[in-house]
Image (spheres, protein in one colour):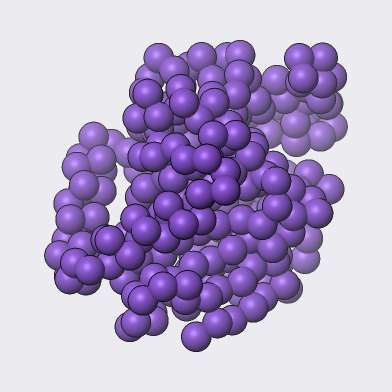
Length: 278
Ligand code: ZN
């Protein structure tokens, strides 16, 4: 059944396929807490729908997602239904902000990563920093030829975005290059590096993604769930969750450092560094 939230839409575009679409193209689908909260409700909706076996995450407009909406980092948490066990969101110092990011970023990404149904990201245009936090929790990635993937936040004095799975997604060598240089990885390179499953022309992106989703959806739900869980378990056995939590701790050392030195969560000089290279 189709549903709509403020920043996200859910529909059933093919038999047994549920599709969640980001609907904030005027801001290149920048993520504020409203979008993440809407997205979480849409994932719950798709996960609980007995008719849905495969979930597609798509985005309206030229770009999949430009990352976190830096103009809306500290909204009133009472406006959102939290689903984790974090609290004290308004506490001073590192405590409150760490709880916010644990709930809204790492917590939600990990929740979506573990939905017991196959998920496919349908990606066009730019995916920047926090944008990767919507792509990387998905099981498969289909992208158009104009897609690119980057995490330039080292320029802002932090280690990377909060859902730190870069070494798992790009491999250690490329992960370091992405982080050190801020370079965007284009679709073709992403394919060669195993970061995406399929690259198609922009006008075939939707049909190619739905074709893959419909193909997968012919298989039994339980078999798909067990296959997904088995692969995820092998990543967990390699320490994926512990790696994320370890990097998240360092990420908050960076936020605290920047707050002490610059009075802001990120080094404001980063903006000029990134602009000079654009
Ligand atoms: Zn952060």
